[in-house]
Image: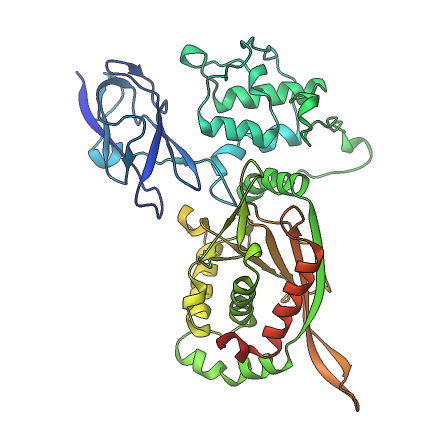
Length: 439
């Protein structure tokens, strides 16, 4: 006995429609559960839609080039006998795996890669190099291609294990694991990839004394590879400055009661967000992304700010949208709400999408300065340390002023040092007199 179900497009975030760039199924084709059926691509992510059950594709309702949205039926699947109970239409809606970006969008790709890089294990049967005719491309989806690029792996040396020699993520993982364990390069020397490095030696630390092994959290595993990629592949420079926030702090405290009446707390962060938006408007190159080929700059006319949130499982960076259109109290309410959801582990993929510029504040902990890592594809990130009292000369006397340390890391391919210094000075001026934000 078999049952027929519809396969629909799942929740794809805030996109009205995404392009079908690859159809991986054919009519009357037998597919396995979780086998990829088609690939979707938006301007921010590539997603593969897997089969919810094993069975046979009886009808295909999309083609390459079509634009689809959440809920659209893309195929009809006749579930094979033995697959279990008949799934409902809702059960057939499968979750897409985001393939790119900052903290959540890349989770499906790095989850298998991080352990392999940290503790490479010998592979019984090394993945042999595949012979590919000159000028041809290995058979792999865009998501797998991006995964391989993140790890610096040459797909032409990877053997595909799926139908028709198609390369999967597991194939790339196995290739990288084997290469790291044997000490061979995973990308051609001519490419200049920054990952052509000798592997770390595995050390038995227990021979030096008592040890304890602590597993990394899921968030740390997901973000680790991408932090390493961003640090290695982006030429970071950090500009340091200070903002006199004496008047801003007095204004904040004077309006704390108003915030409490609205059920929230007015922290310095909403002021920083508004000041950053003003600076991004004044210096558009900081509100941009470099194209993949490095040939052009995408300037953005929206202002979505990522805020680093410290959670029990690690750092996450949810995005607050349209910060130019919101007041201080509204931003305070949204910050409190999204921070709580982050700590509860209830953030959704769309909460991490679309960021233009990020802020990482350690002011509640301490420190005088630090070098934050850019959250690609953004080109800059602001680090904020703990404010402190400092005597400043006003021409007649020294007066105590509350100074806020600023650390701006920027992509030197896009932004030069003079522009960064002007940006931080402008930002400091906005914070010194928050009324200027309204001008």
